[in-house]
Image (cartoon, rainbow, N blue to C red):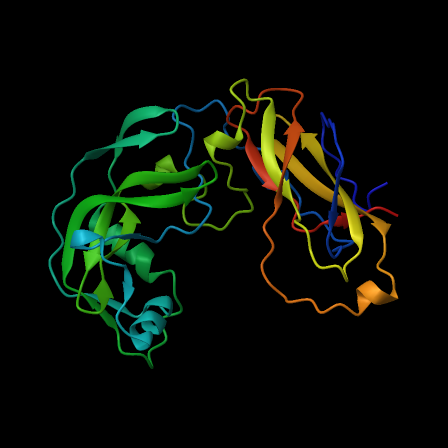
Length: 282
């Protein structure tokens, strides 16, 4: 038995197995999926779930790299020390957005509200010189969501301290799920879901060094009306001998290996959540 038990109604697990070399992690504790119990899976359009933060970037002319011109400007931005040194344009009443479930006309967010949200991301450390934004335009930018990158209408803020422009969605707050709040939704691009919605391609830890134990992994699936919880469970198959344990191991990022999980019902608009730990079988 895995060292975590998730008590969710309608559970269904159809695990396979996958043997790799890798250091086990865990046991751990799965974050509760209960925060998603009220997610409106039947709402049209589906609420936007931003998974990578609400701040985006739009490239400068010619596709030049985006970012801050100095380290001090980056630190000031992260601390919320920003100033709007221009008059923002008037916002339209609505904007057109191409979401994963179609094109929709949605209420627009005024640029003043967008800038206030942008400033609210930091701690407003008064010891830092503020970043000055001298231009505000309505354009578009890509944002990370639980269904992959999504290009949205955005307010673009430019100035002498940045390359390109900093972006904030110009879509009204009501189009989002828990606007601006962090969440534990996993990013699942549409290409990782089978056409019938019953198979999800995820990943298990990749191969490690010879000095690591050989692990067998499986992914357990727990389904509710609003969520699909993926829990990776690792079992130690063998441990390295004395010769393998003495082998040098360079600590580098290891790419995960693909692993298909199967659902009892099509994924639909449900939210995919991945447990934060690889649990250990005992």
